[in-house]
Image 1 (cartoon, rainbow over the protein chains, first blue to last red):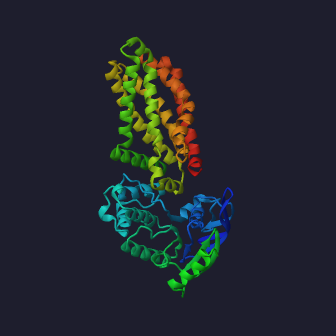
Image 2: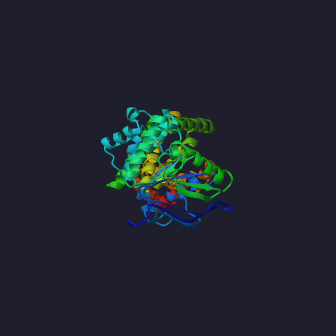
Image 3: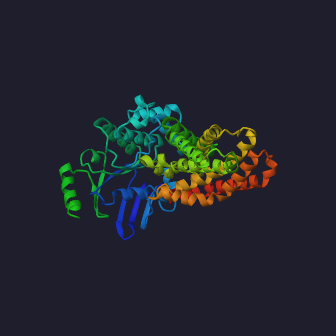
Length: 239
Length: 225
C-alpha cells in the first residue's frame, strides 16, 4: 500500500437523479502535498470531499484514500481521513473539553486530559475549556472542530473551506499547522474561495467548474493575480 | 471494553446535555401534567370507571410522553451535523445505538416516575402497594418502547415529515409491548402476583429482546442511509 497516493480520484461522476454534479473528475494528491480545489458555488467541490470522506457514493469512477476504495472499503478509509466539514460536529451543551472527550472516546483516540488540553491549547481554546459551547462564536466552534482533527492526527486531511470563520490569529495558526502536517508527509485536499490565505499552504490548484476539472497545475511561480486570472478564465467563463 | 466505553460515552453525553439544557425533561413534565388534567376532566370523580381505565391511562400517558421525548432523541445529532461525525467514526456503530437507548430509557423512566406520582396525587389512588411488581412491568414495557423508538427516531431523523411519520411508524410496532404492558399492569394493580401474568411478561421480554437485537443489527445501515 506504500506506493498508493494518499488521495486518488479517477473518472469520478456523481449525479443526483438527472442533475450531474461531478463529471469525469480525475485528481491526485501526493504525500506532503496540499491541493486547493477552487470553483464557483455549486461546482462540485464539497461533493468531491464528501465522496472521499465516504459520506457519498460515486455514481461512476473511483475515489481512493491511501489505496482504499471509498465506496467499498469505507471503514479503512475512515481510519485514514480527517474531515473538516461545514458542520462543526460540536454538541452545544457540552464544553470544548467534553466535546473532545466524546469524539476521542468514540473514535479510539488519545483521551487523556493532557492530550485533550494540548489539542485545545493548539487552537487557543484552552482558556475556555470548561465553558459551554452554546456561548461560542462560529469561529470558536470551527477552532474546536480543528482541535478534533489535531487530536486525531490522520494521514489525510479533507478540509472544506478551513479558513472560513477564523480570525487572523486562528488562520495563521492553521497555516502553520497545515505546513507542519505536510512536512510530516500528510496529504491535504481543501476547498477554498480565498485566493489569499486559502492558497497560502497549497502546492497545487485545481479549478472545478460545472462539475468538471478545468485546470490542475502547480502553484509554484504563480502570483495571486495570476491565480485570479486563471480562475476568471476557467471558472467564471465556464471553462 | 472499548465497546462498553463507546456505549457509555454516548449515554454520558446525552445525560449531561439533558441535565444542562433540561429541554426534553421540562417539555415532558408539562406535557404529562396536561395529560393528567385531560384525564381528570374526562373521567370525573367516578372511581369505578377510573379503576377500570387506570392501566390503559397510565400507559397512554407513558406512550404519549415517550413519543414526544423519543422524537427529540436525535435533535442534538442534527445540530451542527454531528450525525456526520457519528457516521465517520470507525468501528461498530451499534455501541452508539445502545448508548442512545440507555439515555432514552433513563429519561423515560424518570418521566414515568413523575407521572406515577402525579397519577397518585390527582386521582387519589395507591400505586405503591406492590412497587417491585410495578417496577418490573414498567421497566420491561419501557425498555421495548425505548429500543424500537430509538431505532425509528434514527430512521426518521432526516425525513422532512418526521413529526408525522415517527408516531405512524412506531405505534403499530408497539402493539405487542402495549398489550403486554397494559395487561400486566392491570394485574399488578389488582394485587395479583407476577406469576399470574407470566405469559404477558414473557411477551414483553421477547419483544424487548427482538427490538434490541434488530436495533443492534440494523443501526449501522440506518446511520449510513
